[in-house]
Amino acid sequence: MSLPAPDRVAGRPASPGAGSVAGRFSAAFHGFRRSWSRPQPERETSLRQMEAALVLLICASVLATAILADARIALEMRTNGPTLVRIFERITQLGTSGYIFAISGFLLAGSILLQKRGYGRRCDVALAHLAGRAFFVLAVNAVAGILSQVLKHLFGRARPKLMDIVGPFHFDFLPWNATYASFPSGHTITAFCTAVAISYFVPRLRWPLLFIALLVALSRVIIGAHYPSDVLAGVAIGIGTAMLMRRAFARRALVFRKTAQGIQPRAFGRLWRDLRAPADQATS
Image 1: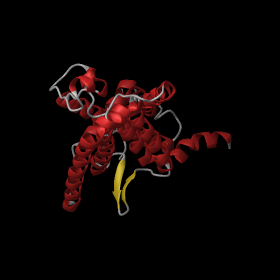
Image 2: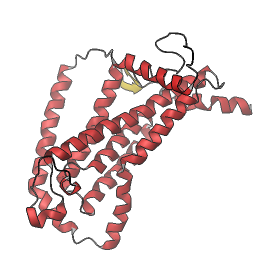
Image 3: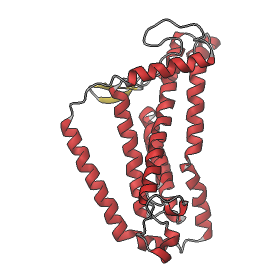
Image 4: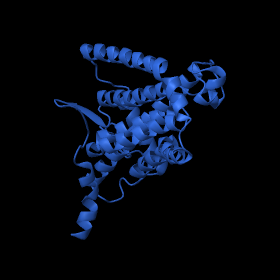
């Protein structure tokens, strides 16, 4: 399932007031909660072992990058010209999570409110799927953002601008100063988890979105906000969060479903066609 139609939860008839704004959101929330509480069992032991090995490899790569490259590259970035820095200061804003939450939240709310407005059953189902996809992007960013903040406060790594004072490996446990929030790169996490999440639904945008995410990651080093190891960790966390969230949703038949070809979005290839149906009928 995707997020359920707001007038129906688990096949039950609509309750009084289900057509109200509060009723629509309440029905969607309870439908999601029921599905989330019933995950399908996982039996992919070999996959778990591969993932554990991959995590160890990523950790080793981050550590090696920190030891071999962080200080040297941070020093080289200080020689960047002001024009280059200004360009990448603009690019780095693409990794700000606020507008991602705003857009996905707007699509989620709009898709729920537009259901049962006389556009037809086919369009209502498509809107429910669109709401589910918007919610997935929002949820991935929320989980990744929380994880980012937890790690930043646990490590409390000093940013490159303090390297001459405290060195590249200074850590303060539970700091409340953003100057000690270098590891991992939050902008990079946001850029990559969003790029991967959207690419699940629109595969043709995968490489353009990943290229933009890569520019955001590079911008964090170029403007001197992070060390390369901070960014590398951000890439891994962003991609990993999106992948794990997709699996969690698929186990509950929410937004995604498991097929012989792997995990696929529900209504894949039909959603936008079904959303256009009312407009096509009106012009025919």
